[in-house]
Image (cartoon, rainbow, N blue to C red; front, top):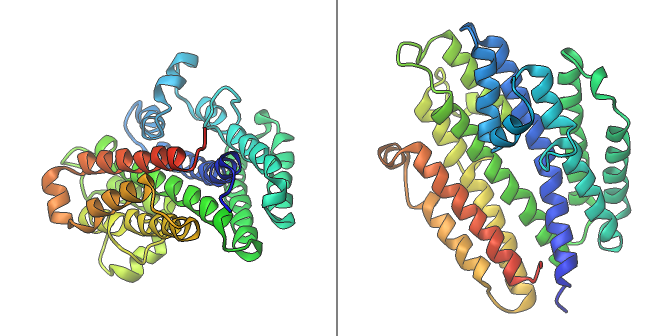
Length: 316
């Protein structure tokens, strides 16, 4: 029996919002730490704006605020209820979706999600500054991991699981592409600074944002190189936040839906097209084409997967 479109939609977006909350925390930490490493006048604000641009929040931020300092950006990304991608908005939306499908998820998943929202909603923004901000960002990541653990450890491997996992990895792929683009397209230093101390610090932060700092060292034993880092975050199939890993994971879950329901849908074709983009290339070709252009093509293809998935399974 085919799952109701509304239920499938709520499961897909429940998972996406949890992942997005974690990713907003990761991006903000990168922007915050980069602002601390900047030694150029106005550099701190430049890094924060670059981070907002990577998250496609820069225009909305500029409409509300004139200055991009740490406190203002942190509030906008963490607590602002008018920002639909703030951690506050994401956790609220995730909790609403979870409540709507209470009978389709497990008790452990519901308690994890409900507890995270209730605890976060009690935090006063004025109390979160400096080291406390970093502590809160870590808390957001930990609560996301707790929800994922409950999901993987307790739910049946059926169509509900497939929609949840598809949402998770569609969102994760989008975030990895944006984190990489933030460094390469927006934050790439002047040629005189490439390979310098600031450049290396920035690459370290980018890898930390993708939980890839130590694993990168296991694969590449030399110092940070732009070519290797891009390869690691795009084409390494063993890296769980790489674009190709996420694409494979979404493909597998969409194939599970096709198997359970007895037919392929337009989203399966859109997913195959996205996989061709990452499987049929190498880093030399990506750099020759343009990394920013490649990442934009990936983000557009990832969005098409969501659009066709929504239409295929009657989300609206």
